[in-house]
Length: 213
Image (cartoon, rainbow, N blue to C red):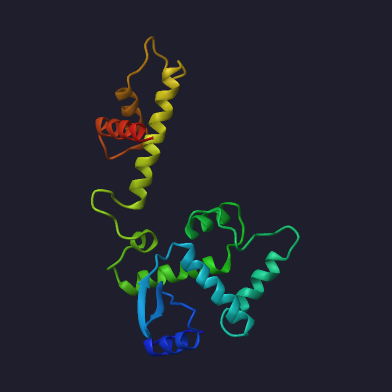
């Protein structure tokens, strides 16, 4: 059931006072003192995708929207060699769940397909005002960078910590008569990962990371 106006949403919530309504844009509607309140949910969240799943199952049972998708999913998942728990949340995010199933050549959950469709639909609707990264991961914070940049920095710190640990026990990757310094190892990480950061900065980040553990 799609409620396309605030009036219809309010009427639905008045009839179902303990319910919430989340539309395809991730806007969660609730009633407070008979007034609509709206909270935006991140697309790439299980809360948003779980709402899609619940709606798909409900409307498929009523033989309305999503009926065909649910039928296909049930046929695939009922086969002996294909069993995928629809409530599995081992992946941190829905996007990671999609990547996991794709890597193992498995059919993604139908709500994941709709989630991806909604993300791309919003991207085209916004006509360049929002990037796909903004839609999937939220707006970049000043001084932090986008999701890919954050992930690269974390991986670089972990990589550097592993190199330092190996060097400390004489198992470094580069054969040398003397132990290589932490700065030399940081230079290797920057070069190998092609980072847009100088080795000294990476080393400072590593030391802050170690100090905070």
